[in-house]
Length: 91
Image (cartoon, rainbow, N blue to C red; front, side):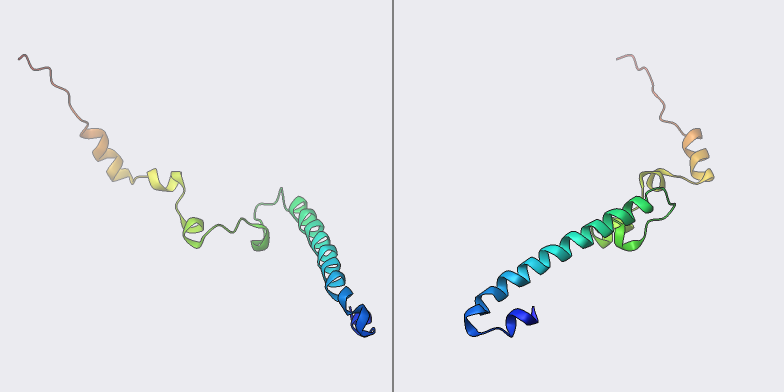
């Protein structure tokens, strides 16, 4: 980059082109690095923070279906003992 910037005025048009090429190369390198890290941690119990899905803060903290539907033993007994009764009424 500095080589192109130090060149005469005519060559300054190349600066943008060189910067874009550098960005493309760095993007490919970082993508490969992340892919390798993803493969390395695919079978691990925990995934590093930077490889996890970002989503939103609220979404990450949302309870799982198991946590939402879980009830205490007392609530379970109460639900079992007071089931909705059906009556056949002759009209």
